[in-house]
Image (cartoon, rainbow, N blue to C red; front, side, top):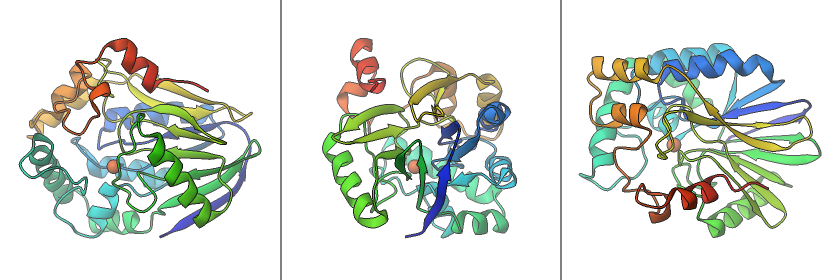
Length: 277
Ligand SMILES: [Fe+2]
């Protein structure tokens, strides 16, 4: 377990996850990052999209503090799949095998070396809060912690406190859905992902910020999603995620809790995903 402690950060903070090899989305995020005093990434720089090597280069050259996603860990270790634990033969499994082998072919040894040195957890203090950044869960970075799973959040907060000391706020990623929840005396902020819409019919993706005073907010990111989808088709990545970029809906909902699926009422989805403090 690698822990990177940043000390105290002052000013505004940009938080985003899941560039997912989506270069137009990452370029759009990079273009507005100068508006913030600090920026951090919750991992999965590489995934579904057509330009994994270019995305790694941007994040690496930026010198951005990034926790390792399961995709970075799997690629660094030379594994043959993304490590999400999809059921064998499921649509997610078939699609992930395609993009993972494409990404693994595209990246270079120095990219894997960069991935290998990424921390599992980043800590900092901001506006009087002790903040911990991680990808999925504490013990397993491929754990999906959905907006509906308060018990998993409470357990993870307790584990983090035992591991790194006081924690008042957790910044998470991995599940692909941005949300803010309060768990007793702590705040759980999933910063969402910028490389794929969050299955609500909006093609814009999601990132998060902390104001100077520590107030968390979620935002939508507009970018050239048509260009990103075309790049996937050109690269032969046509297993379904390319349509997710242009429709705002995931090609498979197998891993989603029922209430977050397309058939749920919009009101329920919005209430859960965007419940504010
Ligand atoms: Fe992930």
